[in-house]
Image (cartoon, rainbow over all chains, first blue to last red; front, side, top):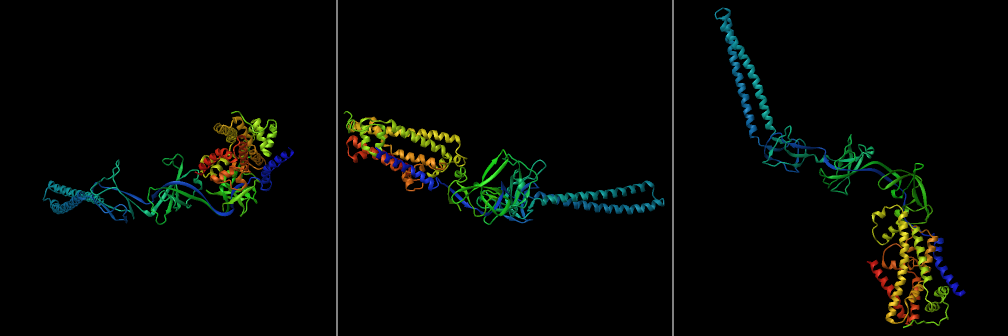
Length: 390
Length: 244
């Protein structure tokens, strides 16, 4: 029996020995962790915003005269220069009006000439009659009659001169309206939208009724984006800062841009609830990227850039908030020969991925960066088995 | 047919302590004693209590959330977002898991033992060897005693090593997988089987085969085929599932 008990004791001892040996020799259960060597990096803090593309220089041409379109000299997408004829509205009636007014002017001029001749004639008669009247050869009544006629002739002439001015003014109006039947491009650009066809009637605007939009011309080189930056982030945004803009159609192509202007007052954009400021970003699209106004986009505005700073992945930084003392401390775990050492650090700025460390670590330190499930429960002095991430 | 025995009454010690010692050192005497007086309480209690203690202790130590994430990743499955972003196991989740796992372990042992006894009884009906259900139950229970070594080793492992980040497959250092130094992380049917099985299970299987052969007077080969059939089928089925 004793021998049997001894055998059992030996068997149990062998079974128990394994975990004990592991604890003593192997250091116990070793957590597998990911590490990264601390290096200097460039950090770019950024603010994210979304918006749409638009042309800075864009003109919507509307008809100033009502009439049927007889000629359309451009198509959508055509390049035009300032002064190019784009469209012709039926001008027959306007031409007739101009001719009519020109005739009216000529008639008035003829009338004035006739009246001048009559006036001259009357003056001569009056001078003759005056001489006779002074000698008493004609009576007063006759002389007064002629004097009156002379005065009336002078008034008629003045009236005719004013009527001529009126006729000339009407002629200018008719000529102006005739000119407006020809639509010219006001700027160099591209026809981005053509809203009328030959044969359709262009309607001019009135006080209460907007007229027909004929076409839209925009300068494609003036494309920009207007994004809405949340009021919480606007304090860090300044004119001149660089940005990367990603159009929905090109989600992986960053388009470089620079902030051109920032709205003075906040507004609530359509479809959103919070206040935001409109920020215009001037774009420099790369070749092969065709941007169109109206495209949705998102922008990453780089507010601060720091080069050559020591930075650790954000997930490696542990934050301990002490609400009693109103103090927040930051720490990271450093691999010290297979043991995790908790080191308190001071932090600076951060971007999406990295946090600047201003004090507590040195370049080359091996930082424990994950996995998160291990990092959460790691303690100072725990044995770790790194699988280096870098 | 009346119950038959393989030993002369009184020639073997039928005390529980003797049986316990003899199971490890002189199995023939142990099974002879059981044939005279089949007992089940001590082995079942030992198996249930030690397993329950191990499971409860392990789940109270391990980071539950870490364990769930790790098990999913080891199986090559995606970790759902509600687990991935969690902070710590949480006391409530840990308690629930401890209770359910412990109960599950207890039930599993009882079910396996009773199923084994039922299976042997069924075979007895066809074979007409006259061994009762209780005797078969005692065979299954006492034959499982060597597996207590694995449980004991796991208990010591939890006691002396930090179990916060210990996988369930790393508990039993006597498993073939751990003895061969197989990485506990990763999927695969063979890896899973090696990490789940240890030499004490083969020892238990051997004891059961020996006891079966002794009581039914069948050959070792036939006894082995009968005894090993259910676990081979179960393992084979599990292996197929894991492999899929």
